[in-house]
Image (cartoon, rainbow, N blue to C red):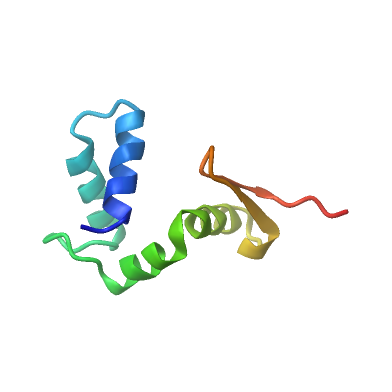
Length: 86
């Protein structure tokens, strides 16, 4: 079992989705992070190696067209926010 699947399953369960594990598996297979048999693909392994903080920063950076280094991670919300320059 990978770290990606349980984490996404927990997030979907918290949102009240029905059958969250099957939905999480389908999402990860569609993204190319898991094979249909449940093994990580090279892309999935790279995402898993980032960890939760790295994935959140990467999502925020991709959305805004910035660098992940410009973001700070909040584990309570699983979100990355742009760092304030002082």
